[in-house]
Length: 264
Image 1 (cartoon, rainbow, N blue to C red):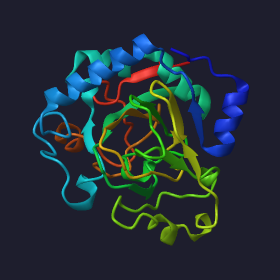
Image 2: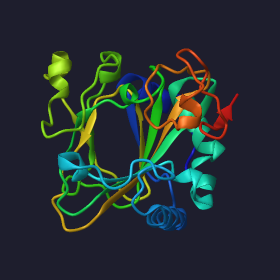
Image 3: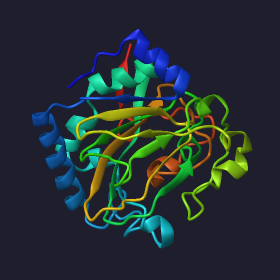
C-alpha cells in the first residue's frame, strides 16, 4: 500500500480539494479488497445500512445511479480490518491538516451496466456534522474510465462552497443553481486504474459519468470526520440509539459508530 504523503501532495490537495493517488494498492492487495467488498456486499443482501434500515435499492433515478452499501465495516470483519487501517487515517489527516480522524461511514458504490450519471454534488452537507476539513477516499476496484463512470472534480470549489446542497437527481447540473459561481469553472476528469484511489474534500464539487458499458464499475469509499466534530441536527446514517440521546453541539465520538482511526 502506497501511503507516504509528501508536502507536495498536501499542497496540491489543499489547493485543488482533491488528489488522485496512483498505485495505492498493489495487485495482491487489490484482490484482497475486491474479495472483501464483494463478500460484504453479498452478505448485506438488500440492506443499504446495517440491520433493517434503508431496505432495498433507492427508487427512481437515484436507484439507477449506483448500488450502495454503507458501513460494511460494522458487520463484516474483513471490511473492518481494511477500513480502520491507521495508515489510511493518517493519510486523510495529513492531507486535511487535522490532528485526528474518525470514520463517518464507508460506502461501496457499484455502477451497474448502463447506470445513470452521478449528478454534481457535495458530500458534507448530507452528513451529521459540519466541517470544512472532512475528506473521503475513493478506491477504484475496477478501472474507472471515461466510458464506465469515472469521477469528475471542480478544482478549488471547496474554497467557494458552503453547506447548501442538492440531491443526486436527474438534473446533473442542479448544483450550479445553488452555486452559479461554479458554473463557469472547468471540471477535471479523474480516470483511475484499478488499485488507484483519490481523496477529496467533502465540500469539493464532484460527479461521475454514466456507465456506458455492459460491465461493472466498483468503488469502495470511506468518509472521514475530523476528531472533535459535533452533531448538527441531521440524522443521516446515525442509528436511533444515538439519535435518541444526542443534541446539537454534542461531540460525535461514539467508538462503535465513529471509531478514531488516527490521532497525533
